[in-house]
Image 1 (cartoon, rainbow, N blue to C red):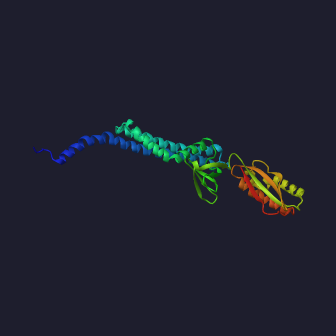
Image 2: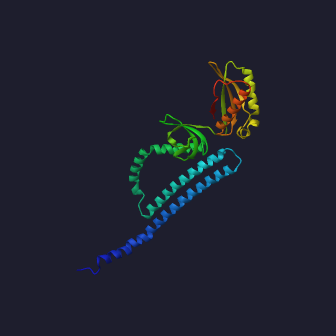
Image 3: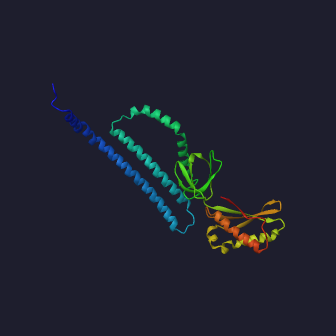
Amino acid sequence: MISAFSPGQRWHDVWSGEIGQWVIDKGLRIVLLLIGAVLASRFITWAARRVTRRLELGFQTSDALVRSEASKHRQAVASVISWVSVVMLCVVVAVQITGILDIPIGSLVGPAAVIGGAIGFGAQKLVQDLLSGFFIITERQYGFGDLVQLSMIGASVEALGTVEDVTLRVTKLRTADGEVFTVPNGNIVRSLNLSKDWARAVVDIPVPTSADLNRVNEVLHQVCENAMEADAPLRDLLLDTPSIMGVESIELGVVNLRMVARTLPGKQFEVGRRLRIQVVRALASAGVVTAGEVQPVETP
């Protein structure tokens, strides 16, 4: 018996029936979920960037020379919250799509366990990075704008630079030469924050052993007392008056005296340079010739 319907007619009936109903009932919902997820993720990213820009603008328009610790922490937290929110959004959308497709979650337990074990074995480093980043941010070890020195596993050279971005997985540092270090948080074994709350500029002054140390001490004490008046920008960078620690070391033909000054976070290098200029100028005026160039030693 020959069918009264052609193959094209049967395909049209199937399309308008089962497939068309699936597209309307499920396909459209999946498409709307995906579009909503993309828009939501872009909104989250936009909101995080807006918060960061507001914090940056607030710092630039204020009279503060350095960022506050709270501002540094807020910028790091905003970056982490946006990243975690996007990940959670993707997970929720994936679960909803499996529900729309009527995929039983129970049937995925076995394959998911196998896949999860394989991914977990291969992603141990990623988990280590995420955990390390979590503790870096919660413990406030450093934040956006901090000057830090990081010791890393397998690296013979430590990374020194200003934090430009810190997330759960990586920390990005901008060096003085303009280069950017991207350091996985799991590789960090020691972090040295050079701009936490305050810093200290340390200037070692080498003078010949033949010099009159009493006269040298008098000149250096005058430099400490007049440092803020002699250099107006230095007044805004210092937290207190510089002081002379005395003789730091004695070498062959050289006596090293040390001057220290508490400064704003991250400003110890600039303060050290300005103090060295005043020290060299004052010693030269007093007729004291230094045994060599004044060498700075900065400690947090």
